[in-house]
Amino acid sequence: MSVPLLAVENVTKTYNNDSHEVVALKNISLSVEKGQFVSIVGPSGCGKTTLLEILCGLRTPSSGAVKIKGETITGPHKSIGIVFQEESTFPWRTVLENVEFGLQMQGVGKSERREKARRMIAMVGLSGFEHAYPYQLSGGMKQRVAIARTLVTEPEIVVMDEPFGALDEQTRLILGGELLKIVEQTKATVVLVTHSIQEAALLSDLIVVLSARPGRIKELIRSPLPKPRDATILTTPEFANITQRIWSSLEEEALMFGKGN
Ligand code: ADP
Ligand code: MG
Image 1 (tube, rainbow, N blue to C red):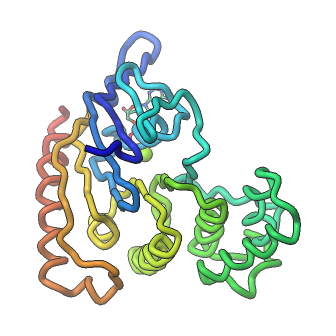
Image 2 (cartoon, rainbow, N blue to C red; image 1 turned 180 degrees about the vertical axis):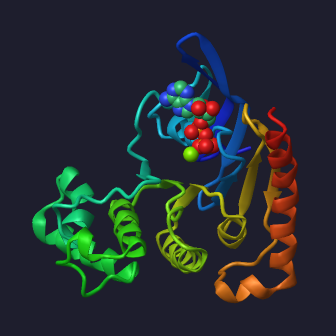
């Protein structure tokens, strides 16, 4: 078997909070293939953010390993681009300057980075707003900037923690559909944490359902939905079927969580 692009091997994470230990993740193993869109869903507090931070090399696992193309990562890795949960644009930079930032860090020359940034701004639907500042934009537009800023550097793997979490369902599905188009064009591999079942069903090839804390892999759901996809898929019986499968898997966990486990 070929080596997967990204592999999580038997990862366990325990936090030591003063006097007591919190087991956040337990024995997580997962393979992500090149070009796959993987969503991680699970009840609040089950360790989704912890798992993403470990994936990105921002946090070390208590045991187990994360490998990129077979090599264990020991810190932030150049193949990974991150879009965080909270709005993460620089308020003092214009849209264009925000999107150029990563390229600037990579030492890309001014005219090349301008051109790349403009192209990416067009892809996320923000042409005409190049010189606007984040405070002049809606929440959805700011998230587009954050996404453009990460994607413009063409990371092999894009990791996102509830990037549309603060948006209404309609906006998040529209943005999700646009993200799909961009990902198809750039051939990026995506690992996304979301609490929206619809979003997971719309976007993913593989949905990873985590159990209530400590997060374990409860179920891997492979999507039978054809690609490319757009919003017309939302009304099909196949879409209803997959959202139902995700929901019933999650519901059991939510109920258990509610009982104080
Ligand atoms: P999720 O993103 O699924 O809501 P988190 O990964 O943020 O879950 O948290 C999982 C568990 O680990 C929670 O019980 C949380 O309190 C704990 N935790 C998260 N981050 C830390 C930290 N930096 N220090 C100690 N405990 C933490
Ligand atoms: Mg989280």
